[in-house]
Each structure stands twice: as structure tokens, then as C-alpha cells.
Image (cartoon, rainbow, N blue to C red; front, side):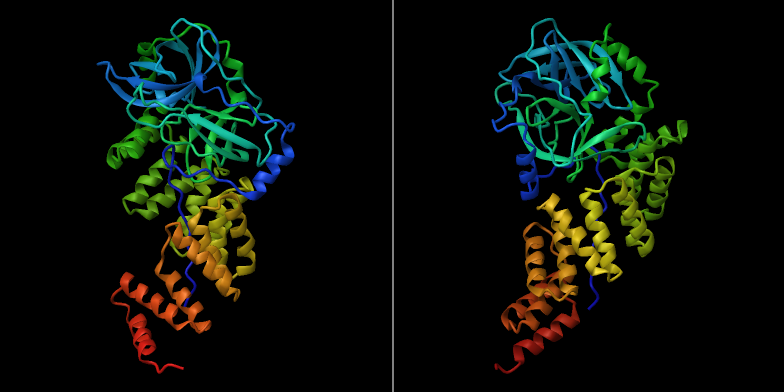
Length: 462
């Protein structure tokens, strides 16, 4: 039978979550690079607040996270947390609820804001230095789960991982910290910390092993900002902001599932500014979900014409080329993505799948193994690695990879055909029969599986 391969299209901006990722390699590197043998102090969670966004009627409508960087009450968060806010309260651990008095600084492109809390004295986090980060350095993130704010049950969550690199995303003139540290829903605007619990960045986007944080050095020049805007003034400014329009589209798409509403907003952004890269990117997600693959490809190609080194757009476009049977174009596109971002887990797995389709299994194997060192819970990479081992005749390794893939939730028909073949070659009739029965449960009209099952159960015993 033909070897099935699988490429994953990565469609996310700010919502998806994954478990914390740890590898033995990373742990060893962390130990080797630790700045001393002592343990780091616990992070100062009392400086982290859940931001409760209110509408004009004073009703709570959404939440985010922020953190205090100056004792007089300067708090950092994402700009997108504030879009359409008529007011914001900062809810600190222990139940202290403080109104935000004004907005000291907004950067809509870099997606950060500095807020001034009501007069008082506040605990702070120490600002670190994001200019010399190295791959596999330890990071953790602090934040609150999305949803209703509750002073009695509110808990600061902490997740852990490591740096995967620093790369531009949709804009060429600044980079993000790419980290395996998961950002839970509601972490937007929260701090990304180093081993000494100094702030390295602001949690901004979430995805599978490509969680993005804006480096803290991007906001350092603005920490002494002066006069504050009111929320009414911010709302007035945002009437003419394409970034505000874009983030409204993101809310409709990723929070509300309103594809048509989001599409209209993205198209309006592009009508006013055809060079708005992220609107092309997210419009492609809608077009994919509506089944218009040709339009989705065109939107990714437009995004990449504007910014050729956008790693997620490259990976997604490569996935569409693969599905369209344009395997060489897919290979070249994934290779470009990995040139930009060498530790791109999805890119490694996807390129491994494409090389498998081209029967270049020896080249695929190390890429897939690297993907799994970076993310040991990546089920699709186990499936693709199983295909490589199967093609290379290493049946025990293939069986183990397929079983791990299935344990993690990926269960393809083609995988059971290969498991059937593995057990048949090992003369393990009972397991081979079980695989045929599984195939028929998944595809009851599969005549080949039924014929082989009939032959197996009627064959004389040895």
C-alpha cells in the first residue's frame, strides 16, 4: 500500500493551548547554563493582575492579564486586551480590586499598552533583558484563566518551557520570543519570565510550541511615559485604527466563531490598507474553514509577498500546497520556514511528511526526531516518524511510534494498515486480525480489509 503522510496546517492566533513541553535535552542545557547552583526564588505573583474589561454599561465583558513594573502603579499588558474597553479593573491575588486610571502608552503594531493604576503602592516584577536570549533557556509564564473574574477563586497560573528562538513574525522590523512555554486562554498581556523570575517579554500569541512573547526591551523606552489618556479618548482614537478593526475581527473569529463577521472586518482593513499582512493571514483561515482552498492559498501568498519570512504563513501555505498535490512547492516552502525558524516544530514535522511523500525517508527521519525532542507530545510527528521507520524497515520503531501517536489522539486508517502489515510480517496473527477489524470499524465498506480478514480467520492454524 502507498505510504500516507500528513502535513498539519497551523491556524491560530491567540487562542490554542498545549501542555507544558519538556525534553531531556532542554533540561540538560538549562542545568548547564544556570547562572549558579542556587534555586531561583518563587515568582512574585502578587505583582500580576487579572484585567477585567468593562463595557459602557459597566458590565464585565472579557479578561486578560497584566503585570506591575513600577511601585506607583504602572502596569503592562497587550493593547488588544483594551480594544473597545470603556473601563478596566485590575484584580490582584487576594481579592484587591483596583480601577485603571488611564492609559500611559499604546503601541498598536507591537500590541502592548502601559496602564496607570489608581493611586497607591504596588508590588512589582523586575524587568530583565531580552537582548541576549539563547535557544533552550528556561522560561515560565504567569497569568489567569480566561472567563469570569472571581475574587474568591482567582489563582495565578504558572506554566514552564524554554526559548525556541527570536524571529520576526508578520512585521520585519521587530522580533518575538518564540517559546514552548504554553500561554493559557486569558494569559494575554502576562509576563514571560527567565530563570531568575525577571520579565523577558509579554505573552501575546499562543499555539503549539510557537507561543509568542513581545520582548521586554521593546517597551523599556516607554516606561517613563507621561500624561495618561482616558478610556474615552482611547475609544475615540480607535475609531480610525485599522489595528483595532483587525483585533475586533480576531475576537469574532477566534472567540465567537463568527466567520462572516470577521471576514467583513478583515476585508475592510485590506480595503483601507492592502499591505496589512495579518489581515491576509487570518482571512486565509476563514477561507480555509469555508472550503475555499484556492482563495486561502492566494491570501497566504499575498501575506508572504509583503513579508517573505513570516514562518507561520510559510508553514500554512506549504500545508495547502501539499494537500493540492504540489509536493515540490510544499517542500520548498517548508524549507524556507525552517530557514527562518529552525526550531519550528510544525515545520519540522511537515517537511518530514513531504520528504516521506517523495520517499526521501532517511532525510525525513532526523527532522521528525528533532520535532519530537522539542515537543514530545506532538502526535502527528509520531505518525510521520512511524511512516519513516516503516519505510526504512525498522518495524519495532514504527510500531512504537504509531502506538504513541494513537495514545496522543491521532488515529488514521492508514496507520492501522501499516500496523496490520507489521504484525503480519512478525507472524503475529491475532494482532494482525485486530488491526483489520479496527480498519473495518473505521471504514465498514473497505472490501480489501474484509477479504483479508476472511482469509485470516479461515486459514488453517500452523
